[in-house]
Image (cartoon, rainbow, N blue to C red; front, side, top):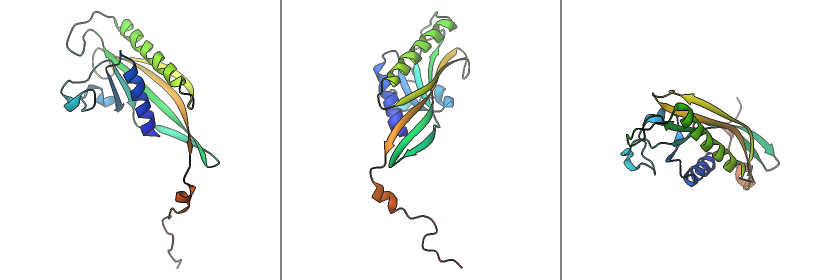
Length: 171
């Protein structure tokens, strides 16, 4: 399910022209030039505005018959720089203007997630942070719970799982 989450969130980020890069990883990687589809070989440096789905993810599992759902606690952060662009061009936006712009991206992102019919979304919050990783870096976080249903379609495979200790005779 983690792959489904990150691929879906990447597709949402790609559909929003203002987002220049999507990354699934750690907050500490916000300043790292990561080799990915947006930045082959890491040669460009980090592209802002950046959409970051933070790892690790945690989920609660509920079983229902031969299926169930996983409810993930999600943190998505939208980062952009104040006073300078990724290419070094100087900007004149205030911190409040950058935060408002990132907040709009978070709202658009949340509404897009809400439009995914099979997913249950709840407990949406928006957070603001500045200078957390380096000077003049503004961030808006989107936290939410996402419930994704699943089905165990191959119950025969589950029945054949060997548990540790099977076949060991007791002394």
